[in-house]
Length: 63
Image (cartoon, rainbow, N blue to C red; front, side, top):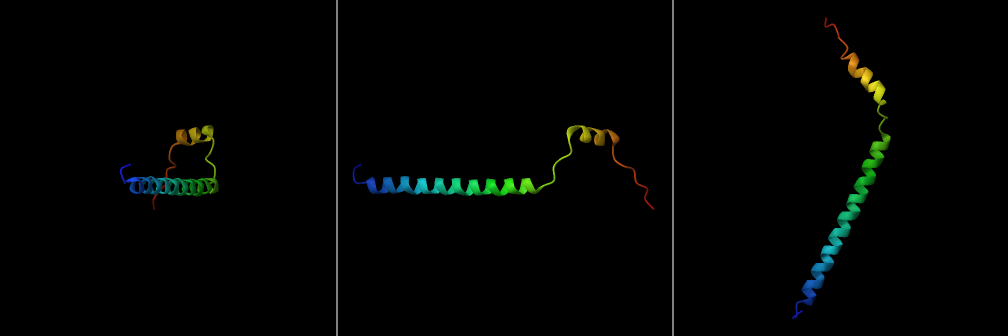
């Protein structure tokens, strides 16, 4: 490599470390978002949502 092997291999090593770090951070973020989603209440089923849409908004009387 004409004397540049140390620079080339260190660049490859740093790049590999950065990619592994990004993979780990992404994986941890995914797990955190999955646990947040699991804590949310479930959505109503499709038929119930259709009925709610057809019923429209509930009218309120202002005083």
